[in-house]
Amino acid sequence: MRNFTSIKQLTATQIHDLLNEADQWLNSDSTLLTTHSNLLNHKTIVNLFFENSTRTRCSFELAARRLGAILLNFDAHTSSAKKGETLFDTVDYLHAMGVDLFIIRHSQEHCPTKLAEHLGFRAQVINAGDGCNEHPTQAMLDMLTIRRHKSDFSQLRVAIIGDIVHSRVATSDIQALITLGVNDIRLVAPSTFLPNTPCQPQLSVHQELSSGIQEVDVIIVLRIQRERMAETAMPNADDYFRHYGLTEKKLKIAKPDVIIMHPGPMNRGIEIASEVVDGPHSVVFEQAKLGVVIRMVLIKRLLDSSTNHKI
Ligand code: CP
Image 1: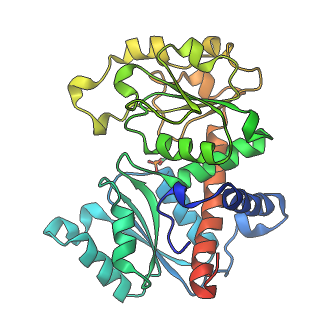
Image 2: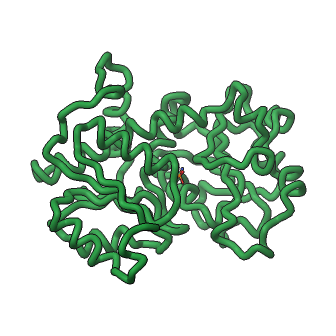
């Protein structure tokens, strides 16, 4: 694995192996997670974000700095991309300056894969989210979060609620859950937010929240991706909250030890009530913490593999 552009690249064994390493770092007394190390002090990484981000960009920055790498934050809004420079030219110039790893977020689907093909063996690529396609490092942090709370993926019932059709998180999470052996994945949304007939046998579709979250162990709530749809397609916020917004009262249908996840950014009062975000079932801030650790593991594995020709 020179590049990490899709969660489909990983088998169950490989996912567990990466999660095991993250767990080892979390469970050790190491100061690695809070202070800077020199594990990658000869490497240069660039955060190449062409779409807005808070969690992913900041957690990659923290991960790279804690590993001791040099980290450049490329600002698309003030860059020469605004003067017409192509992505490949930008990347070739940055590579000439010594960048080893490109962490890219772009609105164009499959852009990270094309970039990896363009770079070949010159430098490496991590997909930090490409359009509606994939967000593989989010899937890894979500699987780490689930595994730290639930022991057996094959016994899990997971509900994904919200704007699934526009969600790269949903695509990558569904793939990761299937790879890890989850047999009951419920897609809960109005018809306009559901993907075209899902064909995997593990998936079921629910337009009613009550059937979708009944007796589930894990709920992943998604925001409505206003930026990826026409304004006229936006549902009324109050109607949406009434039917699909997660509240403490509705949550009683789920298992008593259900965990509530959200990749962020959250819209409190639209897809999720504040009482749920701040309540005892919520692991949303733990997800952010684990995101830094799993990204440290991924960056280190990728850059080590380029040196040692293994992974
Ligand atoms: N989860 C996630 O991708 O959040 P950001 O858009 O803030 O990076």
